[in-house]
Image (cartoon, rainbow, N blue to C red):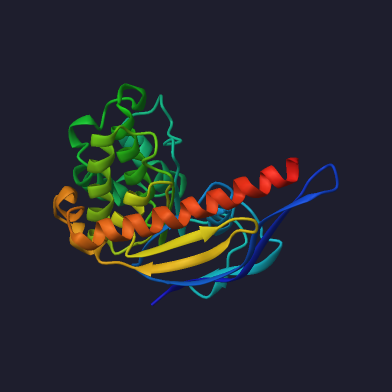
Length: 269
């Protein structure tokens, strides 16, 4: 069983004026294969910085990331990324976007065609495979982005606010799709979100991060992702413990925001 290890990661950004920002400090985690983890916290807590380090887009100033026993030193096909905006080739067809990774890896069509067509079926885009991406709605474009990521068969899927730009109804449908793909593929998924409800629904593990410096403040093990796989998510939200956990975490983050604002006022006084 492969494990994604985050070993004492710190990230410091030095600024031109000689000051610095400590984005992350001594973050350590072990994430097992097939885990679905959501990461939540106030602005400035280093969520996206951590995800970019996991993706290999940033090198930490201290510590290391290892996956499948080797150190992460840059982007790699083992780790796939889904961005808030799909980062798709808008002039290409849906099928060409989804098959882009396998084609760039030098695979012949007969090697990837079946997988790509299956993924298009799973994400509900079989009838749109020849459409150009710019012809699709935002929700459909995010479905393309998910399918394109899966077509590369990564061990870990990293998601940076992937549903943040969608309307409420589409967002709920996409949350259900993420749970479906998690259960069907067994992939490890790490998802950044600003929505407490979404973090509860899409995190069997949920991390609340605290800012300045960014660090893990509290971790939860939750049943809601498992409950929501294959069920109406509105029914999951009616589970009594769901509302209690939502209020607990909202209060926690609100208190952090109040503390940050208080520091800013003191600094400006």
